Image (tube, rainbow, N blue to C red; front, side, top):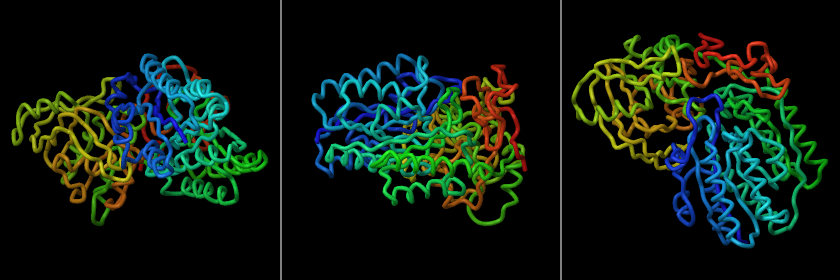
Length: 515
């Protein structure tokens, strides 16, 4: 079986401060860098990505592999038109030149918005379908946070979503999708499909599948498939996209249309019933530090700086939690990553063991977030090249650029030149910090950090310092959602009076449930 493989991933926060151009995809920002042709096979080997699981499955099944192109960039504002067109045109040209194909596998996200179109994946899938024709089976592996459109569903034969958040099953999802593609190629049959869009958004930290209610919702998918459904997926949606298709969706594929419809309705009904349970405690920065210091036990308390999560469009540079640590005179504490190329370069120029006055972090787009000026010791220096071995990154090679550990009193600050979500213990270790030995760790992440940090944490707290990505979607100034979409569980329906396009100070609002 001759199968083309390609990937194009971006989770778009339409409210974020900076866009994704071609350089963002060349660097990867936590993904493998942009790769073309046979080099894809080696680059994706033993990495937790959909393309990795699919390529491994293809090799085991003896397929003839046509590696096209893989590109992924860290979440941000829109993909620029020039980057979208260049990458898409490249994928299409190589698929065209590949000749007759038995199948197509695509590794996508599901929530890509470009400068010139709302539905990046829908457009790509339609164009690939136009090239290969209606008879070639095509599947796509998608992120659990996909904002699924009807165009995506109609163009692909099967869309398969992750089932874990933290996303520790990306490669497994690629494997599942590849087996479904194999079944279609061998049998010549396509399943019936059913698609349901649902009616409320959930704050990202509360979508974690390690706990109820999300844990129960995803366990239900296994039961549905055990009853004869070909594939079932629940997409929580990425709630920071101001487009009509933003929001959760249920997808089901089955031998008959009746089976598919009943499965999709069952997923949608379970999601609707779970609405009151999607909530959890959150803390203002000072309250989070005080709570962490009061928690007894061994191992660090881990505080998630959720409103500056670069995995959702944050800049990984805000200073609210760092300021709270210093004000509280915290001891044996560390925070990362603070992306500040100037501070990193200065640390390298000064040299290890030197002290100086540093100006660290700060995001000019937030009136409540300014750089911190403090005397700091350059404790450790690094070139920023690490192998992130935890369950989320799964062996991905990261290049964070010139990096350093600065020590301010009892607080260590991990400074890097390039952005990536703090979701792996190696992202502390590479500058000499042993996370297991710390009392308090602050991570620029919302949920992915749990995969590697939960096993060592004596407690995990969600904090809301000022940042570009508000915890509560209701704090975002939406103008284009579907009418009737609730902006949070049991929250207001869109549109609401305060979201009529007026400018707001996003990210500066306090936590909904400060404790």
